[in-house]
Each structure stands twice: as structure tokens, then as C-alpha cells.
Image 1 (spheres, rainbow, N blue to C red):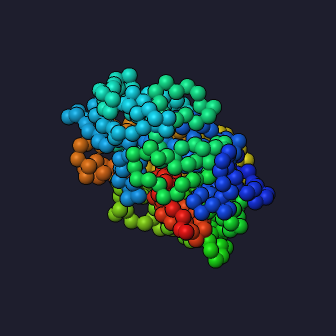
Image 2: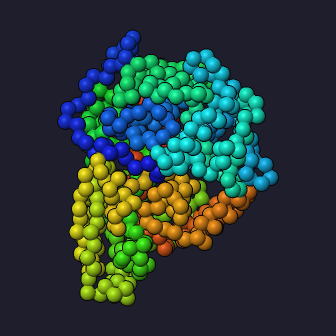
Length: 504
């Protein structure tokens, strides 16, 4: 789901044949190849899908990195999974856990205007109104009930008791000035950098000396959107870039002297997705048989080349609330065959498994799974669908397909994919009692008790749900030897690169 569990933009699978042209900025920028104070960052992104609006759907990682540098957010995920306060200095609830007071730091936009509570509330309301584009990012709030208290204080209202408001506000709450309507170019921000030139596809950012936080160590950052992971890797290997985000495991294996591999542990998942409201996956015995027949070690070794760990069908294993005492599900072919026989498929079962090439290894996943399931009498026909239509025509529509999750927290997964009214409930997981228990957990003030309740919900989803989380691949970035302090946290946290520095 990243922050949001966004699926990749339509054109992310498109390949680039040539290396990147020399990165050059807008007016007044130096040649980065000879400038020791410019970080050249090649990010995942389809250039044609690059945007300036930070409040709707954001399909490119290149846009997220740029927005995280240009705009302040109220909170963000910390490297340890805890919430880190940014523009917000304090967020405190009333006794009912439905009214939350948000205090702001003293900050200024790049045009000199102070950042006011009215600017924050305007931005949050705009995000809320664009829910259809951003998977209901702030749907837990009653934005009509929210109000400005004073220039640096606002009050937010939730529709139900919601003890996780600071974590909910980690979700891409980029702040722009009140009344902003034009997004054909970037509006003023109050983040650690300002836009100095270029385009959304290739942005040139300069350090913002008005930012309230510690001065970033790098004066200039250039961000280029590149769809093809091999082209991103070649850009660093050839010296045309300093950082290449999210490269393929094969590229990480092949790097030579002067290039480093930075690993973000267990943030990439290609789960098998089974819809519970359609045959044969409406039978829990069939779902369990698929889980038991999957050879997780082979998939990890051949899809992620060993960069990662074996999955145990928990969707958010890095989340602090994920249960730690769940026995590893083994491969048990005899039990899988018996379950299929009990479900009436003793003579065999025919399935169609859809996959794509949006991310490296998704197609390999399907091919291996088809061979593995054949061992228990399941004949799987694999269809490889075009990446530019996969996330609109296959995702949340087909009965059986290879999905994608990118290290997003449990609350976001539940909101987007698990609750009965979730905007993309791809497995048709609709359990009223599960939803009720989720609401009770959110109304629990004690953090320890809340995590225990969330853990029980995740355990039930693992046992009864329609996801086969066979492995947790590491996110792999390439950097030149000069790069230090690249963030390694999961999801949204990895986009905050203002502390990255270049050794002289």
C-alpha cells in the first residue's frame, strides 16, 4: 500500500534503451558531474505521469521524493517504526479520542509567509475532498467539524474514537498555502528544499534556508523520474547519478567497485491474491491448500535472489503491531492434496494466475508458483498482462493474481484493502466482526492493548484470508561511494532524503 498502498503508475514497466542524458538543471544550475554539492537522485517514475499536485493520487516515487523535500508534513514514520513529529510539535486527544489538538512549529513558506493553522487545515481538507484519487487517505476525519484555534493551533475531529491520529497523519499530509488553486507549477512550500528549476520529470531543488529544521548537508538535489530499473542502475554505475532507487536484485548482484548496495529490509512483497467471494477460493480449504503448496524458499531465492526473508502470510510484518509468535507455515504437499480432495478437487483443479512486469520478478513469481502448485494437482495457466493496464484491469478484479505491497503500515492496509467498505478490497475480505474488533482496537487508549488487538486481527487474516505472502524482498538502492545517510526505513520514510550527504 506505501504511506499509501499505492500501486505503480501505469507506465512504470516501460523500458529505457539508452543511459540517462547528462543531468542538467534549470537556469543557473551547475553541471552536476563537476559539482560536489549536488545529489543526483534517479527515482522510480514514469515521466509522463509526473505531477505537481501533492494531494491526489501519487503514482511516482519520484514525485513523492520531490514533495517530501518541498513541503512539510505533520508527522512521518520514523526509521524505528514510531511516529516522528515534523511540522506538528504536539498532537493530543480529548477524553473521547475524537477531538485532537494539533500544535504547529513556527515555520515559513519559501515566499516568506508564515505557515498558519489555516494553511494546514486547507491542505487537509483538500486531501480529504480528493479521496477518490488517494484511496480515502484521511477518511477517518470529519473535516467539516475541524477548526482553526489560533495561528499555530487547529482542532481535528474523527468520525469515531481513533487513538492512532498521529500515525494517520503520517500519510502524505503535504502543506501548501491556504487558497492554492493552481498546480501547473509547484506552489510555495515550507520543506527543507525549494524548487529552483527543471520540470516534474527532472526537478532541480535548492536548499531552503528558511526551513525550521537542521540545515540539509547537500546544497542541491536533482530528481529524475526513470521507469526502467536497469536504466536506473546503469545511471549510477556509469557515474551519471549518485542514487538509483529500487533496482532489481540482479543489478545489485552485478555491481562493481565504487558502487554500494543499500538494503531496506523486507519492504517488497508480491503476494498471491485470491478472491474469497468467487469459486474456488470461497472455500477456505482451497486457500489453505495454496498456502501449503507454495515453496517459499525457492521463490525467495529465485525472485529476490536471497535479498530478503521468507514470508508467513502476514501482510505487514514490519509493523510494530504485527504478531511475533506465529509459527512459520511450512510447505506440506500431503496436507495440501488432502484439503483439495476434501474440497471436491481430488481429480485436479484448473486456475488462471495473472501477473505482469511492473516490478522485476512479478512474472517469475507466477511461473514458479504454477510449477509448484502442479505438484498437488493444480493446473495453473499463467497470463502476463501489460503493465500499463494491470492496475486498472486486473488489480481488485481478477480471481487470482500476483499483487504488490511496499512496506506500508497495518492501519493503511486495513483502511484501503481489508475493511468491508475499503476502496480496494481486493480479496473481498468482508467480516463484520473483524471490522467491529478493528474499531474497538482504535478506541483503546492504551498503546500496548491496542497493538495486541491489532496483532490478533492480523493473525486471523493470515489464517483465513486470501493473501499468500511467500516472501519479503529487500528494497535495493544503488549509490556511489560518496553517498552517506540514505534512509533505509520502510514505506513513506524512505522518501525523506534531506539528510543524505556527499563525501568530499
